[in-house]
Image (cartoon, rainbow, N blue to C red; front, top):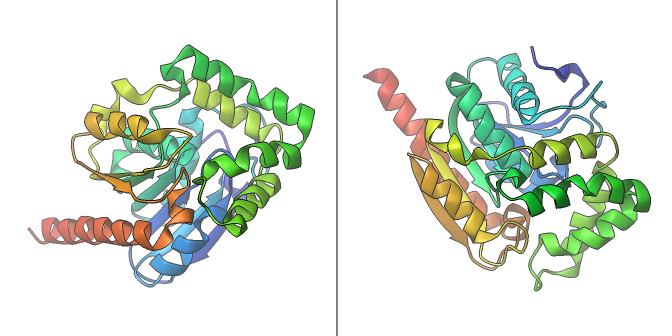
Length: 269
């Protein structure tokens, strides 16, 4: 049982058959970030996307949560549905997914991490900047906070409609104390020393115009993992799954089918 009661989670779900795919959103988002994946992947998989603890429609945590706590809550979601899952994480969600794979390898069939990072604890300045976000949110409020940050989550060439949607999603999703707990967890995390403990096959994706974590962070992940493929998504910013959904979904489906076929063959052996 995790430090957070998953009975308080809001989950968006699509698809009735096939393997489970759990989607974990970024630090400024919600399950709404995965609308393109819920629509496209649910014909093959049971897709579940959470509003993380303390986000959007999910209940606030009783106290601060560590990265381990978020990973354990994700593990509880998987257990509640039986068996194991493929896990897709974007940015902060990718960090949670990787920690989940280290702590609960039996629950993770494969990983897909998009626009992610080893954590903000890799650099003191990044950690300090992450920790400062809670005070900024308290000072400005969610709408102004989102208006300042949302446009940078996609490429400079992204259509205005996407910028507006990403910004509105953030404004509706974030609040204190949940956002502050997530920021502190990120600031305290450095995955570089544990990437070699991830046994699940992993697809690492990054938009070529990602202005937030960027290709360098994704390369650190890809280089530290044993079983990985690394893909640059053309004409996409940080939220590649929303800006170039058809391209990202094609890579996700390819990875998922390979991972599922490998598991089926292995089980028969």
